[in-house]
Length: 214
Ligand SMILES: C[S@@+](CC[C@H](N)C(=O)[O-])C[C@H]1O[C@@H](n2cnc3c(N)ncnc32)[C@H](O)[C@@H]1O
Image (cartoon, rainbow, N blue to C red; front, top):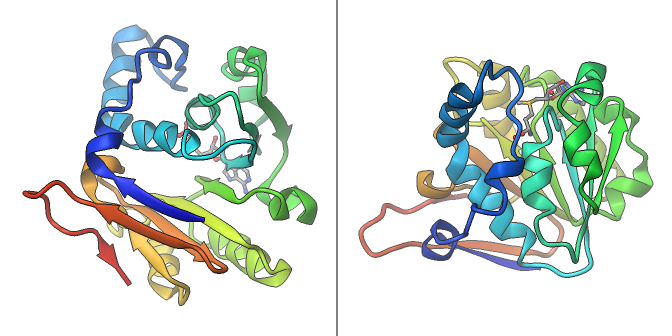
């Protein structure tokens, strides 16, 4: 894979079709839902755009909560998405609408429960789980152990004040990795880790600062 995160193209990604379907867990009403969504819109536009860069692939969304990230990743109907979450309540409440959307399967269980097979056949994996660092480190170790070949997207890796353990895990990753620039990511840091022979780069608008590639 050669993924070129084009900031201008990502910013132009239409969210019109997605917004009405979005559910943000914990929102008391539509106003709060919109406020939470606005904060995360850049990241969701990026996930939506990313799904449209591929045809006929399987994408794994680990840590699905209400299904928003899965919705975005599955916006392109040419791909299949499997979403996984440890928390059963979401299965009962928020996850129902996205189960009804074609192209998304839901697994109720932990990241550790996922089979080697599903990891191996998912060239794109989004990891947004407990943020304690321990669970994320275990997941990374597992990908290393099975010889995973693909791209891992990690949420909130650059917010040490709140997620110290996760930040340390991110800093300790020796593989090629990239912190996406803020206009297309969470302000708390969205990291990309490359497993295998793939290239990932960012096309910046002339006046934006560089993403940090290491
Ligand atoms: C921040 S939320 C995910 C938000 C979602 N990715 C989105 O953008 O819409 C984190 C989710 O991870 C789940 N979680 C925590 N630890 C987990 C684990 N070990 N395996 C699977 N899910 C886990 C939680 O239940 C929670 O719903």
